Image (cartoon, rainbow, N blue to C red; front, side, top):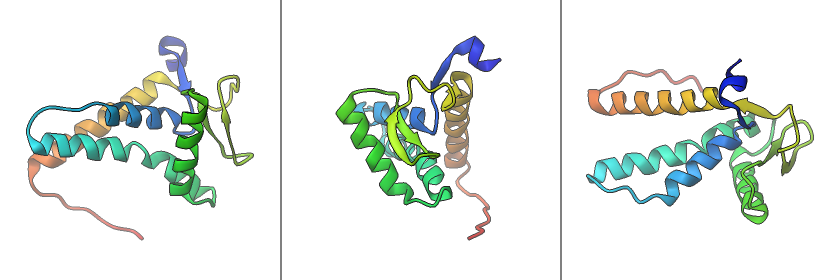
Length: 130
């Protein structure tokens, strides 16, 4: 239903890479902590693809670079990773590897809100399972 209302974007974390690229191209003005947070958030948006790669048994970081390079060469926001075939290709005509726009937007908004809250509380508790 979300896809019908707001459309779809490339799946397999490809939309997050595009959001990261857009944020990295911007030059935010303001306090240095705001600019630092902006850069951290832009970099963090690359992580979902890396985690997908790691979970599939590949080097996630290498996969991110591979997809980014292919996106530059093809100049398409639809270039992404197909985990089933382990190929980086244009996903535009693939009805399976998509995400609803609303879901991706909501994830980014929620992450930004959580990061902002974490920065303002000046302390946090966390667990590490590794």
